[in-house]
Image 1 (cartoon, rainbow, N blue to C red):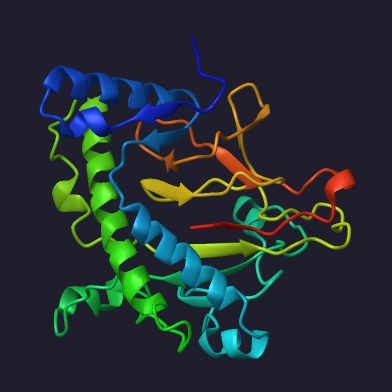
Image 2: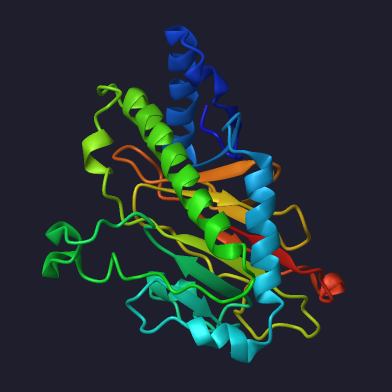
Length: 275
């Protein structure tokens, strides 16, 4: 039976050494990838204290005056680094849809361990994927916290890719040598309190399908949360409480997702955040 809702999957057994249990995890992940392209993972092993540090520093950064945040503004549309202000982008444009700017602001970093002098990272073929990160002066803990979190997410992504390989009946390490110099980015989004009704077609983040192999998302269970479009064309809520993973693999469904705006009765909605 095709999954029509986003499943919650505990991936802890994958590390336990029991290959039968690991295979069951991979089978469930594979089913989610094929049917809805989205899943919530529990048992991921990320230190809650580190998550709290990233959350606290992101909130502190977004609370700064706009002029200070703009000191680390994204330098160009093709550079995925730095700060993007409220309504500064409309992600639905990635699907050819014209909408008003999204009701969020964001801050992005990329790889934090780029070796000096290695031509791989500076060759013309690398484009802007290894552009230097733009670090704000405040809060002071943002750079160390986000650097540690980027590395932790990279390790988690490697594990998830091994689960994908197992689900695809490939060698477990099939993807290892293909993602060892990845171009991932870490982005924190802030969805400020909405005091006025949105413009027609305006969302907190427009409907979009991510590109790349996977997206790992930490979100909040506040009004106006994340929804995913299933194969029946229905938008269903994502059960928030742990990390969510959106997938793109050779056999996966390319899911569309959108942080929705609250219902009209809740236009004065609380702020939300995601990383």
